[in-house]
Image 1 (cartoon, rainbow, N blue to C red):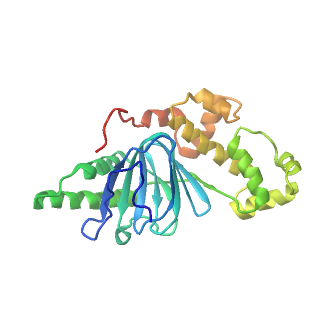
Image 2 (image 1 turned 180 degrees about the vertical axis):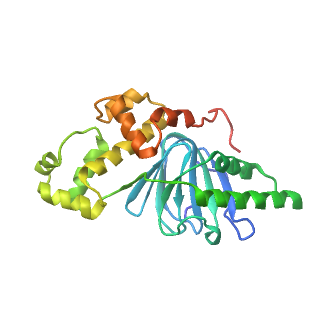
Image 3 (image 1 turned 45 degrees about the vertical axis):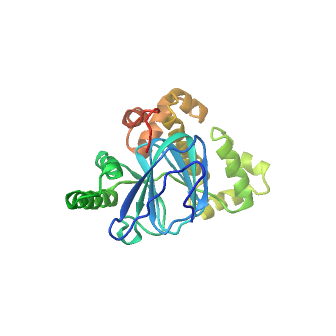
Length: 272
């Protein structure tokens, strides 16, 4: 269990039966990686600014601002900061967990959920009145987490070495327009074998997996503030309009609206 990092001197508070939720405020160095570890409690990793990438159980999830990754207790995971990140880690006691205990997922963070997380990070614990207020906020936050929309932002990762070769190359260059036949010519497998492996190991076809990969990269780049036209071009879309249409089909809102919804934290703000 990872409880301390050299760059993270602020003590972490684990949840207890009396306080089933604790909120930890974090500002790690840009692009840092928190190595593989696990917790006895569940965690909601919520970037208030920037984008994080969580790997666990053969999957990879990207969460930009206003999204969060739910990590159940006992699941080994790795967390990467993509650029500068302002992070809230919400620890939840196993017995109070409002989301599944067997799988990670990405959820949408509502304005109310965000406000509750910030309030709990600052609320006093001294008097009986303050304690009762904290309990009410914790119960409301658990309810908001339970009803939060889940988002299909997970990217399954292969175990077969032939498929790993293709997927690793695509992750390095998501704009690559090679067909599956062209990838087969560069690997030790036929086109039919690669198509079967995509279905069997990753649960989707080659085109669907590549589109999900491109969406993940798009979210990360939008989270960094890159212009939409550049994001579309760099990821291999014929036009910004084509990229926007695909983005809206997947997330229910165009990328412009997504940009407007992003929250910014003053880089000079000190996190206690």
